[in-house]
Structures are given as C-alpha cells and as structure tokens.
Length: 123
Image 1 (spheres, rainbow, N blue to C red):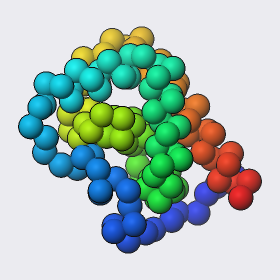
Image 2: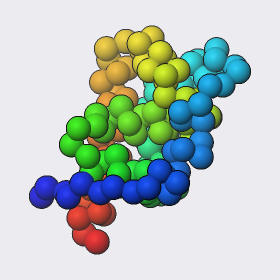
Image 3: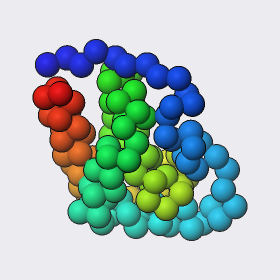
Image 4: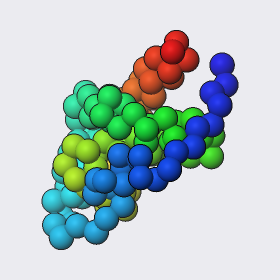
C-alpha cells in the first residue's frame, strides 16, 4: 500500500532538536561509535526501532517521502539519537564498513522500516 506523503513544520521534527544536523566537537568519537553501532546489527536495529518510538514526527515525514533514502535516514537518525552523531559523520562512518557489514546494517534498517510501515498502515 502506498503511504501518502506527510509534511510537518520543522519545529515539530525531533531530529532538529538533536545533533543530527549540527557540528560536534568530538568527530572521531562520532565516526567510530557510528561504525561500531552499524556493525552490531542487532543493536543497530534496536536503535532504529527507538527512532520510530521516540521521533514519531520525524519518522513519519522521512518514511512517507519517496524521495528520501529510508535506510540512510533511519541510520543517520539512529546514530544521532543513540550517541549524538550528526548525519555527515554517520555517512563518513558508513564508508568504513565492509560490503557485508553494510548489507547487514541495511537489513536491520529494513526490518525497522517495515515495522514502522506495518504499524502506520494499521492505524
């Protein structure tokens, strides 16, 4: 089922109150912790599910948009919520993962996205 795109004012979006779009001082920590989280696929999936619960407005806007890479968005959001890593440093961490690690992280993200879609459509 196709989900209708949702728009919200930026002031309601939880991601804007986080470090997701900010500059942080400890860049090394953000990159290494983001890589560590994405490699630990079960923990990463838990962090993605946490985004769905704790950032309902941002999740609805991002996952209802077909022009956004949903895997990337939920991964960036999970790292921002989990340990305060901004989106750009999460992307940097992603490039350090092997193809197999990326595939496992994408599968974890996909499971979280599917869980959100199932719950969203049911409501």
